[in-house]
Length: 180
Length: 184
Image 1 (cartoon, rainbow over the protein chains, first blue to last red):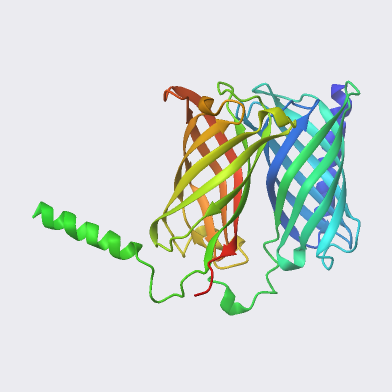
Image 2 (image 1 turned 90 degrees about the vertical axis):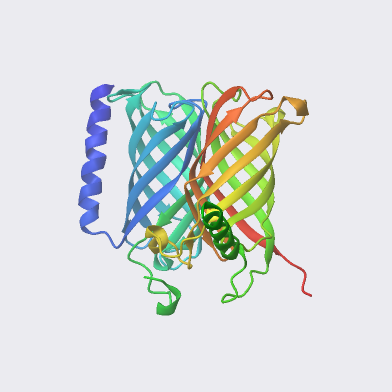
């Protein structure tokens, strides 16, 4: 099972690299992450990623997830997500819903670096507030299913909040409102 | 001479703590807060993600050493366990507010870098005397006109007899000012 997971991991990285060539805008994300009933186990996790807009409704994101508690950096995963904006185009729909299809690869397990279990993920972010145009887009209360590609086990994942920041999009602000 | 210097420093601090006359006084009195946190292996809390939901008051418009108080529920959210919900009462002390800070570019509103120290007492609803004392810091904390945003805030925990009881980490804490003072 290790070899297919490496191939999938490399394929995701290549896809992300190719997609970046046609990206509409770049974004940075930070947030919280939890796993229950499987995955790397319960705890408080932090995530951070880089996203690229693809067309009207798609957004590709490469990210990392690291355990913050109870054992900091005891587990870490790298992954990629393709997100589809359900209610309308990303740049113009202020209140949106996003459906994600993702892949996660364990890169640190129990404190030891190396490739571990890999997962496929389907996640729904029911409340997405903001747009790349306004510079911020926040995902609130995302809930997902995680499928362990090795064991076939199904578990749940949860994000209270993921904040996306788009550094290049501040055209909406009057010049006097910003202290630069 | 040393006494004069001490008085001069105290007078400067007191002057800085007074509301600034150049800016309009904030109309806000308090609001709601929420945060997510986890606990260390040697704490009395099970592994998981905990959500804080609470109310806070922030009545003083001081430029330095600005105190505020909060009352909150700490909910084991993921996995959810209603039987382990705790309460906590706490005090925060904002050290200062710095308007020109490196993180201002990520904020849509005008903001100030405003680190803070905190102290709290948590308590179980089943056995209120079994709670813990908590001291913490908010090293990455931003204040805007109507909110406070804090990231990666560590806390040290102590048992009822002040014996060490592990640590906890708030990944983020967002506080929104929504209660205004009554108009005179």
